Length: 223
Length: 191
Image (cartoon, rainbow over all chains, first blue to last red; front, side, top):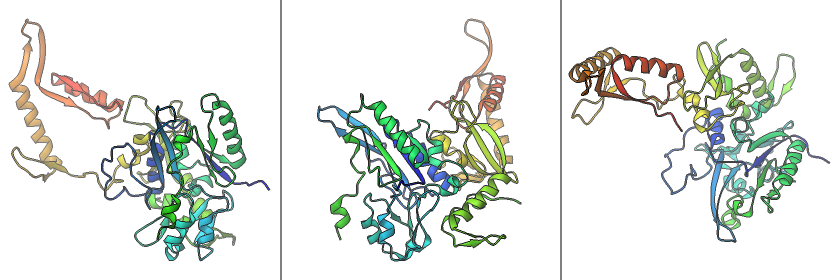
């Protein structure tokens, strides 16, 4: 059965890391500035990690390619809105984490403050959930309020390079395939991550873009 | 009805309980949230403007209610940015009055040699600035240059700014500065 609803297509080969998406996300969702203000870590990546007020982060990935040249790739990290969300399965109460019927968005409700953060975080393959001061958990909400009013999510609206597209899931999958085909000469290793499992379809140009897009197994299991 | 920013966004409604409409339908939290946003979008006054930052000149839509700005984002019908924005433009809402608690709302003055700021009213500050401009201008004004050319200028005052001014404000501002005889006039909105 085909999966309906909405999806993002994150084309990392088009991203130039202006981080307009990060700002637009904070602006629309009224998220506070990071506290304390992050300090210089020798990278333009900022802030250093997702948080309960930072639902989307552009990683500035530096890596050395096999041929010795240097790669500097920009990759979005945020909730993948999994089709079969492991975080929801890990929740004790069915209404703590819900799936929006129209879009398929995975939504953390107020009830997440009664869930075990350790269990929810361990369930997430992508190390995305973060906990606020009162225990409630937060992450990307797919701007469902906007989407239900025929607006694009704030990040997709703001993106000046078309690196963030949003629409009906099949359209996004088709767009991803078309893009993969188009960039194949320049990016022979290009791939879409977890295309059957998630609604945040991340299109990577090369394998050097890959790191920090998975929860480290050791970290997830460490107690 | 006045719509506040909080009501406009209804962020908390994503996580609100199930509500029943006047027509008796049971709506899910997402639908409640979306229905309220739709109503507020319809009631808001939509005004177009141009971003005050760099020379690209992106178009923005300002949603306001009762004279209060409740949202700003890229204008999808503007030919330059087609609804998109850079990271500075995406934060434009914070420039609109009263939306950013970190912005100063009073004049602050640090007296020569002092190590701390004191608050001052505009009524005190503007005459003080005017007096100093006049004193410096009077002391440094040149009617002719070293070669005898008529210049009517002062090299004693310069201006840098402001990146937050739009094109028309910049025009007005430099008219004022040139009327004083200033020639060191700069503007830093280039990123």
